[in-house]
Length: 233
Image 1 (cartoon, rainbow, N blue to C red):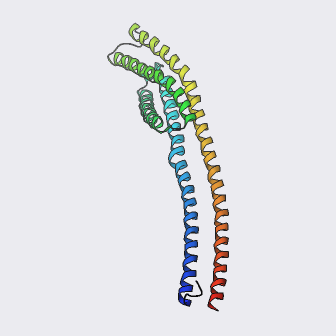
Image 2 (cartoon, rainbow, N blue to C red):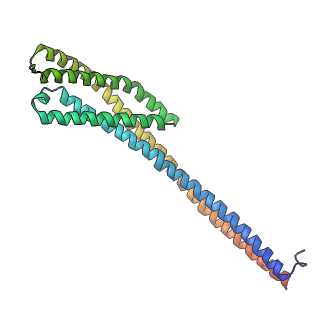
Image 3 (cartoon, helix red, strand yellow):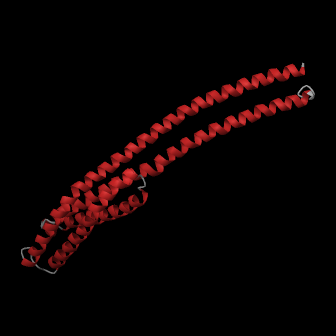
């Protein structure tokens, strides 16, 4: 059949076959590169975001804890600068914790991550409502103090007792919550490491496939060239 073709047609046929092989080769290589890109993007957009959000959640909780420790002390009412600083800790910590809590709740899809997060939720709900209780007591105490009532007054002492009791409850929840935050970060790091290993394996297999496909295309191209040259001669 090929012998019946003109030389020009034979050359076009050979060139066409080589182009088809190179196209297939290019598609396979790009498909593997796309897989690597997708896995890399997932690590950057999902896992690293999760680590960042958990870290911010933990930092917000620490900041709230610093504010609580300052607010149970009567020194806060004697030093305006000290009081404003701790109120700033409080407001910033609350905002950071609330924002990142919502982000994490939406982003955790992995079963192991979700299991830890559900444990955190069980502790965090009473902790967060208890924190609001403490904050409300602090505001009551501040209003009384600003109205001219002395720190030694029984009204303020009663609030002090409630604040201190609430602080102890919050502190007991703080440690396991902080521990779960660290565990979640560790868990996400492990997922990142697994995905990085997958990427390394995919890169290695892509290199091998690229070499094999290139060599295969080259060998077939050489055979086609020899075959066509024999047909021409």
